Amino acid sequence: MTTPDDPARATQMLREAEEAPAAVARQLAANADAVGSLAERLKSARPRFAVTTARGSSAHAATFGKYLIETRLGLVTAAAAPSVATLYGARLDMANALFIAVSQSGRSPDLVDQAAAARKAGALTVALVNVADSPLAATCEAVLPLHAGEERSVAATKSYIASLAALCQLTALWSGDQVLLSALDRLPDTLRVAAGLDWSAALEPLAAEQDMLVVGRGFGFAIANEAALKMKETCFLHAESFSAAELQHGPVTLVDDDYPVLVFSQEDETRPGVLELVEALRGRGANVFVAEPGPAAPGRLPAAPPLHPACDPIAMVQSFYGLAARLSVRRGLDPDQPRHLRKVTLTR
Image (tube, rainbow, N blue to C red):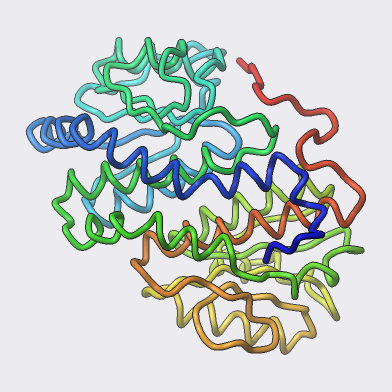
């Protein structure tokens, strides 16, 4: 998708996104022993449930982790609301629970305080952080560094992809999923392919839009959440994300002629229902772009060859980041410095 005169090449966002394949390869190798030890501990501990905490892009990674843990281990996984502990002061029963905190900087006080409360309440606390010496890492019992390297653009890219890879590695070793482990070995190469795919078919149609929907199901729903956030923060485009199932419970009424919809559709049990929705949306006149495998076709955004249902959406978001950076520049914006935002946001 990159050309010599591509103005997006000047953005930190695009350059950092293209570093994701190397970051994932580095992380999988560097964390293998630590993740293996943690997985063995989890097998012995048999936690009652899992809880995640995160903000922004990291929260979407945590959603991805929910689908992984629930589908591979059958363990109920919920997203915690930090304010329950940090503002309301409620004491939650987390004895023999797994508590996973996902963060780029590891500095937000609400996540740090919530992790401390979870550990005090008896949870095994694990931090997935890009800054290994951060307050969050110091608070949690186990730390899995993301190894994404410094990320200067306000818009997270490689750290998000690295978070997804880390969750895959942990879940695969914990559940003994050899198929997923094998796919992870090939993930960096697949990401390199994905980074070079051409999604420019969606560039001009989205350039003048103000609103859109982003849709996924299962593992793809976590990617849809992230894509909608990036459209908002880097392109000033009001994008809302929905599960392909949830969209039909009301929000579908937003769709009319030429309404833009971006759909992520991986090869797994969710695909038939997602494709049925795509046809219904097109029947209502929507301008639908579908990231999916298959030969070139109108409305289809190319996807890397299928690798694994949990890995394929990771490759799709790798391709998406190129589109987001280019769309931001096309709309006269700077994706590296969105207005009102800072790289590290501190909340309570």
